[in-house]
Length: 203
Ligand code: GRF
Image (cartoon, rainbow, N blue to C red; front, side, top):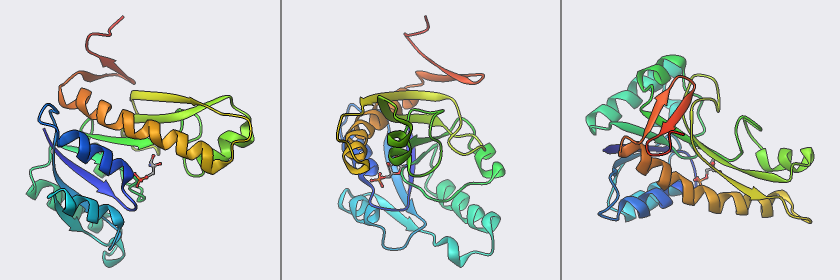
């Protein structure tokens, strides 16, 4: 399965995906990495892995539609079949999301549907939850919504600040994103209404 990864920043999740897909036994192939932020460190990671990179600076486009048209063109040109959002910090229009329906996945640093949006670790600490975590899900037009593919929970420990908790969550992100991508690429994470059915775990 040909995968395009959209990034905006440091790209540690991209790195986890690159490492996993570098293994011949992984069914996904990352064919391009696209950043909306020129100079994002994620682009260096892609180049180091020998993966084609594209930069589309959203500020150079006259509105979201024009930006997304260019995005689609780049993805199509590379033959991308599945889009992975990995720290991509632009909201996508309903039209774009619909075009990639069930062919676009995202990682979010919380146990969705709790703590959509930004600053999830601070908010988890403020809420006093005992477990926090991360979620890989199919993308829907509403932000951080959509059928859940894989989640990982981590404990909130006494003395945690947002950085300590965030680091624990990030480790889990790097484990579950490659796993979720594998399930999707193998056709084992089928969307059924609002949820995902994992093949072999139907019960
Ligand atoms: C991760 O926490 C991811 O869950 C969120 O943005 C962050 C990206 O980090 N969507 P990185 O660029 O993958 O290191």
